[in-house]
Image (tube, rainbow, N blue to C red; front, side, top):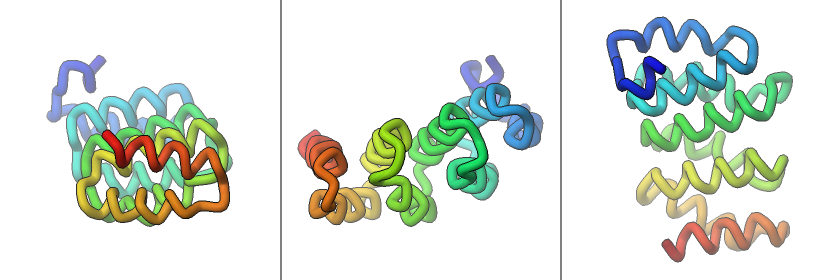
Length: 127
């Protein structure tokens, strides 16, 4: 709810929730993405890359990184391409929001050996 209302003064509380159970972490990540909290990028990258966490939490963190728009997330997002379908789709979407650095990553993904990655990246570049 806090994120949907874009209450940036609650970003500290949301960042603290990223380490909680996965359902709460997913909601917190979504809220931080809606707020555009740049200070949460490191914690969101940790959550997105943690394969011990639920896909829902990782996908929310990936989406938040795209919403925040930080190019430092590009290597992590590229690493998600070709894994689980939901992570791949979220990473492609996030990369499409990251301007030139994201576009460069998507152009590299078009050459992937995985047809689903090629298709998603190609579609994102056409938009």
